[in-house]
Image (cartoon, rainbow, N blue to C red; front, side, top):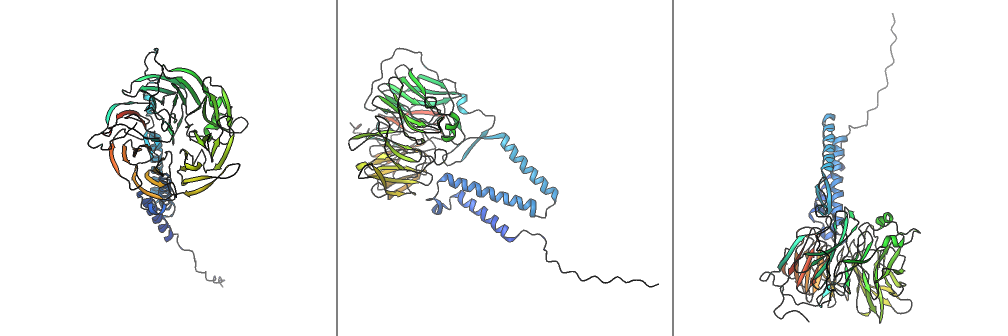
Length: 553
């Protein structure tokens, strides 16, 4: 029987598909990510990126690179590697469990000025909640009215609001004559500084759900009176509590809280003369305002004649903003509003230019001069910033000839603007240097034609004439600076206080004092020879050694 033969099949074409293997460029990419993250973390790329981004941005870059490297390795292991699927599943579930457990056990208490998080157990309460809700105070008694003294530190950054004092003449030899600690005690949270009148010091603090204005003795630290209002400000990046420093004028304490409360308090007995919620008064939605000003209202009150002037805010019910608002010092009645720009975190200040007074301040994205009589805008020039991201916190300085110095962090740096002839007044940049005096939430001080400040945490001296750096040295973190004559008192972010020469020749440290422990963003206060320091956990008073020739007149 004949069998039908099947026709032979045509030869198959050779397959060009290769087994899946991780390309060599995957390994090169992973190695590059890992190496870059390590180099950024260790600061090896400082010469390349140091003048472009600040430490916080570098830390974010490190986090992104490190996370990308880890995730790339994990994806390769789960998708491309030849390991058994059971091992892949076990590794994936194990890593997921570790992340979930870490999130359940820990929370971020706060972050440093360079965005380094501080972790605590999730069930641990905030430190300020462990303190009494209202600080202990003496019984109300009739007290003599406060009398001003020559050594008073009555407002934010001192008598002139510039962070500079001409006396007393300090002895910088702290190794042989260290500062004498007068007192040290726990205090509520917040970044407020001290203001003083005579032997009385006032500040703001957060204790639980109460925002408190407290008065204590400069010499002993004993609490004399407190005024509390139900309010609480809290963010992960900004921390807990009020930010502004009170102002004292005519024996009355004026204080603005982080959520909008403005108080006028009789200093002698702690009696509230009047109080007002600025947001309610201006018809501003607290929720919308908190989104626009997420780190809390930080501008201190400006006392100008019969007025107390504070930043406004917004947006209001009509969607607009108010830059400044003035209240009657005696009654608290609103006298005027000025400007339509969103506020920043700067304190308004009263200056005189060409014989005319004006209120100098920095709004969200501009520097402006306002008429103190009615709040009208005399002039304005642009200064980059957004109050919910790259915010402006540093005070402007009026220089000779009506020039204005201004600085900030976030890669903006420093600049001097000068007025141009003609009406209306316009300002143009005399010089601008993005790599100099990158003050994040600190301020510079001016002395003999030079500016001194913490530029991304490093002390720096810059010539105001041409914007040239004289020197840069010492790492102090996001701290604060106070000039006393020819010396600089530097409050490091770690809590240490350093005394250094205020001179353009070189950076010379004369002495150090472990004044506080922990993260310190608060400004210094010097009344006579007594230095008051505080942070979000404790406050202390020190007596500084004076030079043999005694205090300056």
